[in-house]
Length: 250
Image 1 (cartoon, rainbow, N blue to C red):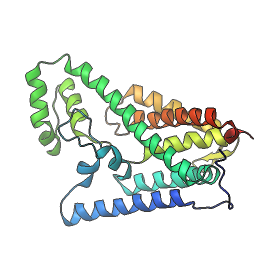
Image 2 (cartoon, helix red, strand yellow):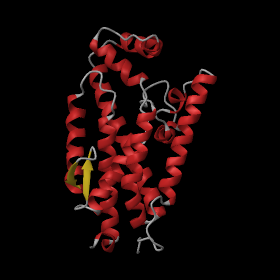
Image 3 (tube, rainbow, N blue to C red):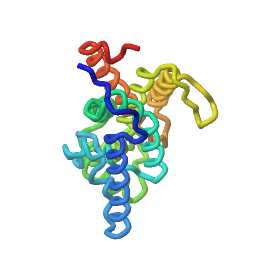
Image 4 (cartoon, one colour):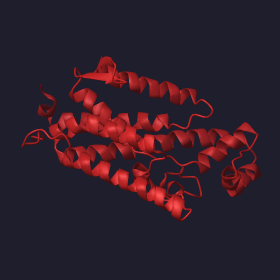
């Protein structure tokens, strides 16, 4: 199967364009609901840990279109355009669309798996009544701007009641695809420091692994979701490469 798109190079190919439009619209809708109706859509559409009473299956999809700030939205959409443009032009819209969502869903699955490991490790060291108390009251405590002083209870409360939002997991998959498809293209870090795409991807992947393992207090970035997007994107590319080696030939 030949997946190269015929018809020239587009600065804003259709899937990338529509993804950017949807994300921007969702951000504007979120602001409207927040300030006009007092409803935080991130609490409804963000992805909660599956053991949380706030988890809903649709969040597996909707969390990818939610962003917490204008800067969060801008940098995600800029990266989607910057790297996704070339990938979609090479692959075509259908394959890029599939890859984007597989990376995003894979990011959510991998992050949830890490959450489950952390949750089971902490819960195993606590009496059931304390865990039940966190489940029943932890959300209200967080909403008041506080948390439990006991580290284990605080950890469980954050796992159960803080959702993840954003397109970053899918975009890290796109970043990986760009690095594999265009390994020697120069990428400029902070628009100043030149680096080949393959080293840029390795640097980012290594950094996400290190930051995720360190798990610094106050770090609100889902590093393992980013890493999960890259892992699932890599696995999908290997699958496609096996089925269509011509796709990756120079």
